[in-house]
Length: 449
Image (cartoon, rainbow, N blue to C red):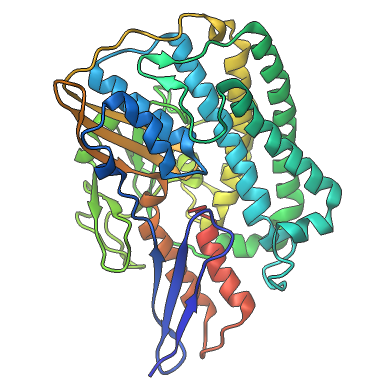
């Protein structure tokens, strides 16, 4: 009988999961699976609810990225009711979502991921955490906490709630931005841009270089990628067309409204979460490491791969350096961390762009909307990947059916593949050390599930 290794729970991730690795009689990996407790049930919870109430319900899907569910949901309701939101209302929505992206990226990099590199993957787990980082560099730790708190408090001070927001409403936004609000938040975002630039330089010089071989090889798999781009092919976190890139770098753009023509969802017996796959190439679903079928990835690395460019100058310079080093598309799983920091720079810059446009203070922030029958698809890029909310309403504006594909869901299949690759490459002759198990967990943490 072969040995079974259980890693439960997976540490330093934002959700709940475990890993089961089965070894054969020779101590080699026979099979490995990642088990996710991802059943939320909101697709059924919202049935029969007034559509305009749903954007205040679905943020409870995730306490880490509630703003993104709030935005995808309100966009779907607008679509159901056939209403175009007021321009200033759209800008305020995008601003809040963009700042939420930034604070989330700072949270993941410093609090969850960095210890593997700063403290080291073989260090004792009692020190390989954010407390270990704080002890190693107290001044940096203080700065990290201050900057993330600043981003979070912008959301709370302006919209009233840092989590589970309610300020995006049908047709626009519930609260206008004053000139004093604009100036105050603009000054804070310039500080956050400086910190984002410090963070990516710190990572490029101090964090990644000692482990660059590991970065290029651990959890390495070959898949396609999904992300959102604007009409010029630039990365966009709030809206645009979806771009599905094949592993060879060729791609197809399509409207989020038509996502069901390009994406299907598969159920496996060992996971509560559905596993989406691209239905228009390699027809079918398979997690075979050598010949996967229809498997693509979402989240930061995917977005950096699919976009032609970044829409802000500092982020564009970082993208060019990244591609010069690693190519396009790059398949290295641990480069999710690097891509995450490029997006932090972009989020800071884009928030400043929005705030420098005084049209954001226009008091006309909400267009009139009337409940009606319809189908609406709302799509934004959440930190963990492309987020899709798809609603159908009846003549009274009540939800008849709902389908949601959350960011992590796109990556459930690829996470299993990356863990399997990591386990097979690291475990030999039945030898399993603490460092090996942590490296296998690192293949999961890169996706920030």
